[in-house]
Image (cartoon, rainbow, N blue to C red):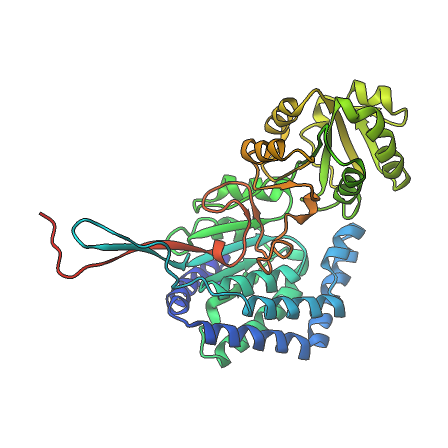
Length: 418
């Protein structure tokens, strides 16, 4: 069978499975998710054997240590995957719920009901745990999903997919509600991205290069974020100790993720006292500071920033720092160089905090908290499928509810239009 035939058949099967999943009740979905968690734990050795095949191949291909680390599945990884499935099972099911209802003058009652999106295609890199997170969330929301993980994780992903399929079949659900594209050839991605007849939404997870490739080649709507250029603005009325802790956490706790701070903006009136204190702690932790001219005058350890530093997502222990005249300049900087991902303000002034929240156009805006909280789990959504910065139809971390849409439902008692 050709790659095209394989992918098209998968898309058709997913469409049929989605129709069955849409009518599946919460009790059955939740039972299947819990059974999947049990299956993963009971067959941990099988998963690790498949993963070792991927790791051996990755080493032969001389993949980077960071890539190999993301690819590895440990006992802790398996426990985390199982825990995630159980947490998703415990979430409220949005499917079939109704929103506000209003009555028209002719007596019609109008409301909206939440329904599954249908068939979702997810294209991602490396981490096999994404296979479980994505499958669990999509199933909970009543969708079918086609997963295309990185070629380096094919053995791990196929093993996980086979286990999911077995549980779905035993639960009386369509086994093709979760499918893994079974080939490494990149042509499979191109074919998948052109199945608009059967697939309703594409979600890419990975680096900016992957996401731009998907957007430029897809005939299906894409939910995306290109990068996370996240800012923390330290206001003139900020608590300096709080600001220090927030900025340090936002940059250093895990610098290689999309919700890490990449640019620090500091109000001029506090820059002379705040910057030396935070810089000492950052530099001690290995952070390279690239600053505006005023920052460099204050900090001898800072290197001069260039224009390319302000929109840069470093994903590393590198931080751009700018001293700003006021909040207007901070908001302007964010609107000019930000990526609509995550921004934070540290301030004790309630009015300025409210204004920052209102004027900054990003998927998550925080007051007196680290940017690292832009995460589905941290915000109480359970697992997340990704973070959308594209606004349509979701903006921010995508949990179960964001994997559904709505339709209008109208209740009448014989009305006809005149």
